[in-house]
Length: 137
Image (cartoon, rainbow, N blue to C red; front, side, top):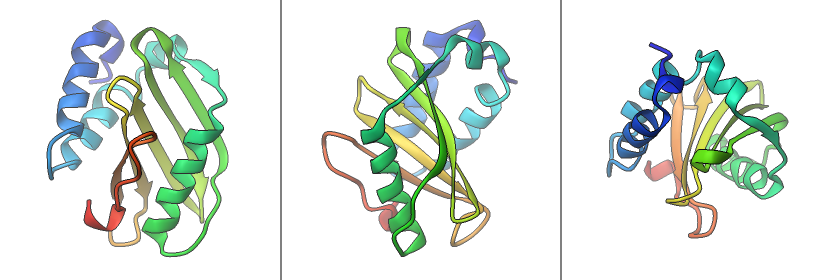
């Protein structure tokens, strides 16, 4: 539990593999929450960054999931530069947004808690390759 910082290459590869599964994104969410979310060394190894394009894409994905235009509030974007991995959190419409993004594969995931349809909604997205429809994820 919360051991991502003990071996970043291993844990990031495991997270990426789960995230890229064609249909079951929940495994990636659970892995991120178990191995990364509470790891203080992981948080300290990441630099606060300003990535307005990523925040705009996350706002778009959240808007699609919620069904109306919404804006992210208080976005905290962190960059684990050595591993080209972005992660963070925000608020939207009274919900928590957790996200991570792999620059190398141009793929990320956003978790909306609570979700519109249940405890949480998950959407996979791309920055340069277009956006994936969260209703189909």
